[in-house]
Length: 555
Image (cartoon, rainbow, N blue to C red):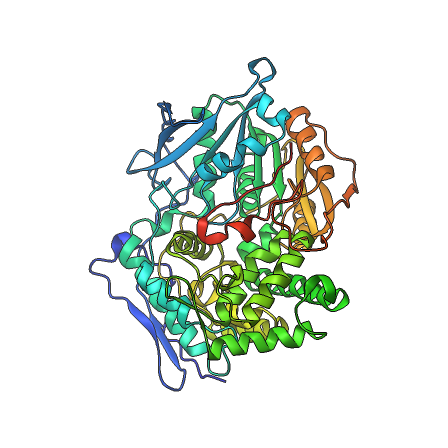
């Protein structure tokens, strides 16, 4: 067990805007694993809403044609809501007007997951597949949140450094992996300061919610109509909690437990480790039960998978462009592809077979690309701002070790890998060097709001079902719809859930208490070439590195 030495007695949050002239001693690990960290703490201005004397101006949206019937604009909003008339940040927005003006009810905000996904691309990629009732009833609107995509995107590691990090990572990290993981996370944090330091404090979800309210006003909407999936559900939860009377209809799909996310991040992360490994385990169990369709494992898929990770670590596969794919690459790809649910299981089996044969056309042997780094950097930064990790390195070590041990299929690679996605952020966030005025502290009751629709999928590997249950109980006025299925989120993957969402958003009809949908597409007899109706196969065909997030053909 490493020995830890703390010399820090002041708060860790340090504004990059005041770093010039401030002495910052980074956490440095010795050969024995001991650590020390010291930081200076500036005076922090008041949080938004505390004795503000001015309000931010509503942005003016100058719409221009941007092809395909879409209109694009820029919205200038305060960088720091503590100074609402000060420096601005520009947000990229897009909309497509209601297909039937006679049926128009207003604007539907669509918020993708992440953090780090582009809302502009989310609308463009999904509009044509939305149910006709949504396209007829609403102007469909999306935007890139601050720090993402076209809205002053954050940069931490550059492409070369990130590529090295994911290439050097292992599928089976082995003993002694914690110290190097901590050092690499500290390097990542320093790169964030060096490349995006002036933006880091201001990308938290409280400020994102305030941006949404300004955009609502800019669009002339009295109340907000909103669909948010995955991390978009947390954004919607914070908005409802801050502005409950301004809610018309909020759909929160693949919901977060907001209290755990913000205040008990280790508990939140652990649930995600276990949910992801649970999904992978159920896939491997299916492989064992239906060897003819799966084709992987020769009667022992779990053993074959563990051996494959080790073999790829020891002898990486050369990719078509001359890169290297190893056990970490395999785990990284599975982490996203498993989100598709049972329909993708035959494709996963076929891809694992190819990986065994060292066939670099397997989609599980595609290392993260520079496009994925544009997503992963903001993903880490936003969560480090939002989540209040304890400062103890001893507690960090204990949690990382426990998660790696208790989620053995995919957990070790994520626990000891570089800062990339969601439940793997603790090593960076415990050492986070910037102040966090844009973090939302709660509560999450949204007292006085209109009814809110929460959707949870029982076998969700990314946002565990119990998170949706917890959110439905924390909100004062929420209805929970359950999708009994594998995979991430429900809208677009279930005709039953999709119909419920449409009826709610259009006509404000809330599903009856206890409603459960059970219409998941079952595994086909072989790997599908195209997505079956109601499914997407988005990660199979595109992957996180292409930044395509689709919600399926739900017309």
